[in-house]
Image 1 (tube, rainbow, N blue to C red):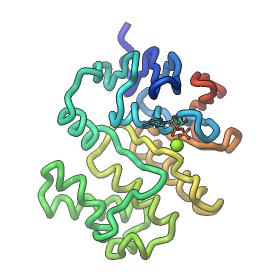
Image 2: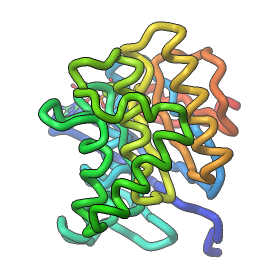
Image 3: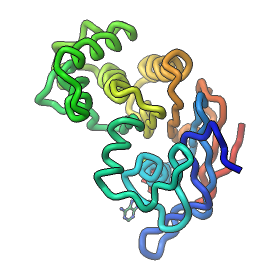
Image 4: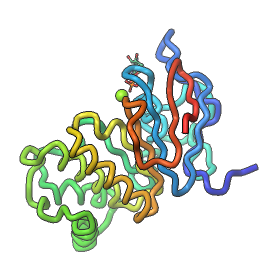
Length: 225
Ligand SMILES: Nc1ncnc2c1ncn2[C@@H]1O[C@H](COP(=O)(O)OP(=O)(O)O)[C@@H](O)[C@H]1O
Ligand SMILES: [Mg+2]
């Protein structure tokens, strides 16, 4: 039976790089409204899984579905279109383009999606104001703290109204205070902007504002909470 509220599904997904099997028969469903964490120590395959979920890489075997549709066979341009409009991505490092201001960084995905300048500006400021970050609009990424940079990266990932936000170790380079601010922001994105959120973390015990938590170990994913 079709799972009506599934945004992303991995069905029996395996990934190997040459001889090394990184993911083995992984199953995962991210439903509408959920906030999911994928925990695992460094090197277990979190980023490999993140790239598959974000359509940046393909499974070696198994099926990835977005909104109930298989995406394995899609071409690069169709995947790029889905990434632009349906999947917000936040990486561990190097999220923002250094030559652009915060405002220009946030407008960029909208420009790529063909949104006109006045609407881009309006949407960018709407989000910046909503999350109390409008004061950063004219700054360049080099003049932001690491925490501010990650918060701006989350805003940028939201501009095209994605169904899901994927963040790969978004707090691992941040101190405790900035980690808490970022997690609070992601929690609000999930609850108030109604976006499904999936984050990875190397901290197996950290309390996160999640509805489901998974552990990735020895290539296998199992639900721990
Ligand atoms: N493109 C690649 N080619 C070969 N090996 C890779 C590639 N990407 C990742 N790996 C290997 O896969 C394993 C898992 O990496 P990764 O997914 O980055 O783990 P994590 O994000 O949990 O630290 C590591 O041993 C890494 O060296
Ligand atoms: Mg990683």
